[in-house]
Image (tube, rainbow, N blue to C red; front, side):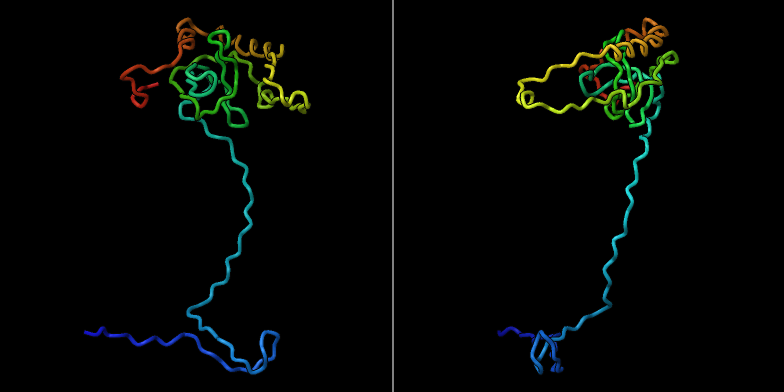
Length: 201
């Protein structure tokens, strides 16, 4: 049985033999005209957007000056530190104190730490002079001989920063009790059958 064939559809193209005298064709040459359906849309104009400066990051719930934090990354991961204040960059200023557990005052991202319910009295801490500029590093132009050096020499901590650390920790350590010092000295670790999502910090 022969299949039924469909009649070919009429093409939507039509030609017009309008005479025109232009550079594109000779006079009297037929040109194709295409039909368009519906309304034509004009291209949307791109609006100029102004870059907004991000505001200061909000602190975690329950994070107040004096809260004990557990650091999760970096050289001191697993160590506990005392939160002092939030800097203009949004980072947290924390200290061990250094005399108690060897953690110097430093900047920490709040995403990389756990805030505990334990709090320490930090009213005696003088941290007004400590800002983001305090942690800025000096940039020096590298010499040709130093570019291919095997290893970079570690810079010794300046006497000013040592004195600043001692001044900052002095008021905190005096107000601490023996059990608080023992808690800050202990490292945080998980043993078997201990699940982080079930713990109450």
